[in-house]
Length: 275
Image 1 (cartoon, rainbow, N blue to C red):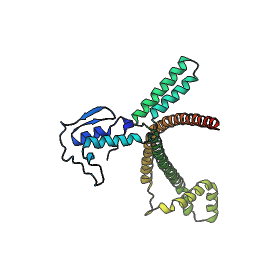
Image 2: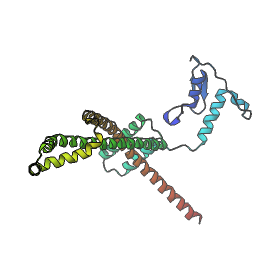
Image 3: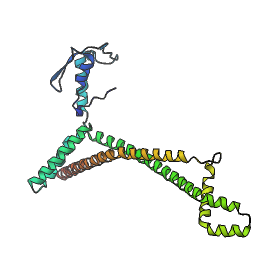
Image 4: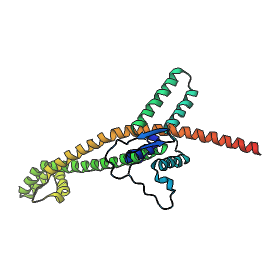
């Protein structure tokens, strides 16, 4: 099911004409949508419930009534109108033409950016921001878990290095039969032996048939590193877009806050007059 948005320049009447392959006139737009030459329409019958007005069996009457009913609803504020008002407010306080031109430039850039994202109403903006923030949070969580695993693998590989470098000393110690000689050798190679035994304890759960999955760990680290870089590449434009949208959101908030302040002042004045 496709949602038809007037805010995006779309028309329910035009969509109905296209799907039915007919020519329909919109009373709201004062124009015709002619798709009588469109092929591929298998069925365009209108099925009305028993309580529906019989004149709604006519497609043009039905969709004009739909558009009229839709127009009777409170319309959500349009971002373009709010941004234009924000620019106008800023220009009232601007001290030079250069500042006014800069405000107009920012307005044009913001409007163009919103159009490129198909954002037309405040609800569109807020929904997109929430969805974007959810995606950013999910990517950050994934990146964080990969970073944590990279640290774990790095620590395992560090233990492997300790184990390898200390193993000759440990093997030599085992071969020394006399206690005095053993103690002397241990004292001379204390640091190597201590790091070897520590690494052995930490690596013990990973030994399989006397071997460690060193190659697998290195491959895993390479893959994690690439996945982390891919996430950062995906996050970068998301952060840039979110920053622009939050700036626009703040501008909209300023306008709405000013409108509320003015409305409150009008209500206050009205109450004073009435009393």
